[in-house]
Amino acid sequence: MRNIKLFLLLASFSIFLFACTNDVVDNIGDKDIDKNTVVTVVNQGNYMKFDKESQLFDDAELVVIAETDTGFFDREHVVKYAEPDASGAELPQAIEDFYTRTPIEILKVLKNSESAPVVENEKMNIIEPISLIEGDTESKIYSIENYNEIKEGERYVIYLKKNSYGEYGVINMNNGRFSLDSDGLKIQTLDQDHKNDQAEHNEFKQTVKERFKTEIEVLN
Image (cartoon, rainbow, N blue to C red; front, top):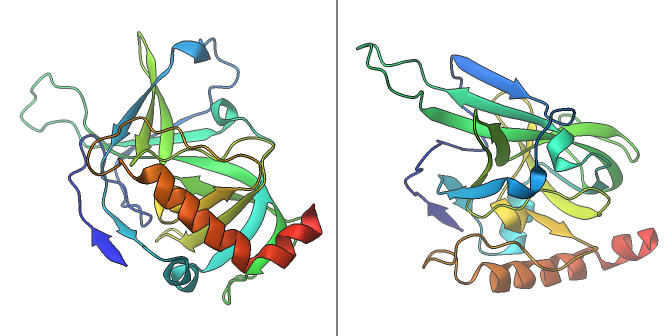
């Protein structure tokens, strides 16, 4: 387990989200947005990084196989802005946090929460470290550490932990959600910190599939 501390360019994201004064909640599914022109901006962030699946499993409060029937653009996107500059300078508001609430349906419980257990077929919202921010002239997807959103119609093994507001969020970035229906990640940046992202994800995923082989086979 490594505690990765990185400078976040545009947001200060953690699974334990901090309160901000100005929150913007955006559901854009019914808006006139050209989804093909939306670009993704990758940011660095502070988070607890686990190098082994066993450590990840131990830290998670809830592990499930789940899916969503809601497309990314139709989800609830939350952006938290800092207070305007007290000096009165005409500067854009800084983004402090952003995330998406993704509705999922639980297909199988692999590790249950002791404090708030869930059941199969239950529906709940989880937090993902990615969001869509609509601008006056263009819209952008902001992602932490190359995080890929959970895709509509695919089954995932998801490792979750509650934040300070009692909401479950994906932990360990891409290596905390594993699609059982597709293999590749969208890697937006291949800098030194991310050149091995796909290989690391594949290694994690193989361990996940071995640990939960019986539970996954039951769903097939």
